[in-house]
Length: 257
Image 1: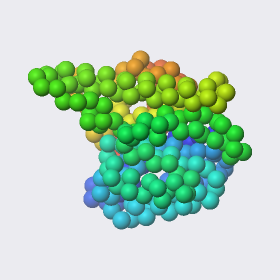
Image 2: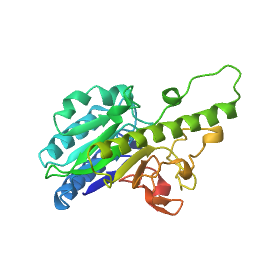
Image 3: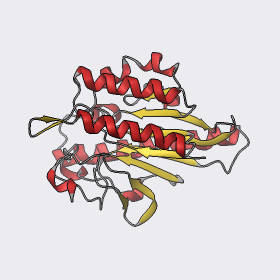
């Protein structure tokens, strides 16, 4: 099965007062051609499709036109919300885009089953099980407890994120066993900073205190972990199966190096 892992498009970004519209259009044209050239079964976007929660109209047009064009190729599209994305903005077109072979997971779902997806190859056979995990907000996985210190709150958040990953991974295991395919690969996603990742100046800190970075040891033993949020492409902690794909275009001066 062929999956193209992308993230951090940041459609609608302005840099030094200049629009990036032409660059983003070139990227989307390239991505559409790459999906066709490689006969990709799916494209995975691990967060930050837009640069802000209220993207300009031209950014929405780029987004919608790409989805329509990709739907004609038979390549499935999976879109995960990032910390720059608005859950409401991404979610408003979720049902409509489902008719265009596109699955949108704007935030942590009330029904965890919505975050475990079966990837099918273009011939219709099962290719992988996906634990579709977007950016996790503190309110998604923890409750406020009176008297907690800042460090205790951050450790509680880390535990909540860990439990969310483990719960979805177990559901993925159950899914492949129910299919009678115990060797089916399991893919997980994430939009967060991990221990050992090399960031850049345009990356916004999303957790503070004790959870400046999520330890790689806390990820479940998925076959591949597709990450977003860090804009430089890299393996994490020396693990070949845990990767940031990086942003498609430089978003700050230091990313142009």
